[in-house]
Image (cartoon, rainbow, N blue to C red; front, side, top):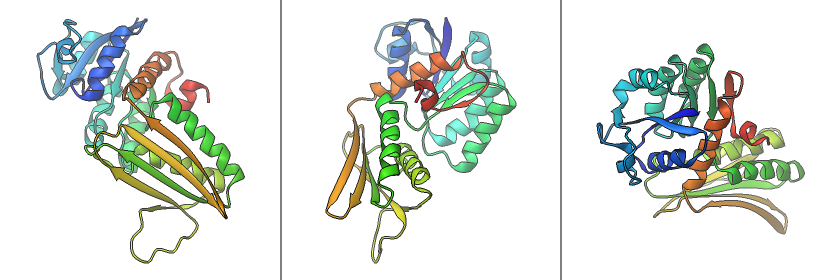
Length: 263
């Protein structure tokens, strides 16, 4: 059995992760961490019944991971927390699945360094949906044929999302820029803004939108749109749990969902 811990276990994503792990063969929930509901049964917090695993304070991260003999920890929290906790997890020899978005280049560098120094395995991705990672593959291929078209990215999320643009939109922009030989990113437009050699990125925030991403390739008298729409957070959870089962059998290093899915 692969022992899996969840940090941020009482949030919306965390609760779904807890539930999905308990239903996945060969995986066992070993620990749960949060800043809220410490001492309470994590199964009861996720409304799936008593599991016999208490929510541990994040301050006890190292001690609980070692005592529970956790193999891999899943983190879908916020950048400020992940950059502190990921190096502690790595120092315990525990593998990592990181879905936190909004990490700055400096924060990402610190996390990468900790992973390499401690010789663990990690999957880091802005989006764990199988569909989104196929979406990345499709836009990369389309861009190779449409490199002279104007490219725009539009993303939409719920009104509680903290970072903008989304990590998925930024990754899409990177994929497209690599495919066409490098372009500047422009975030929204205002005032006099003549279009140059750029990829426009636009963020919409409203209601309870789970996550929509559209790439427009616009040429003379025609356009192509490639779009992914998420209807439930479960798609991200399923991908993260799949990554957790996969990563423990790999060589030490940093992987992406392309690696997990064989794309």
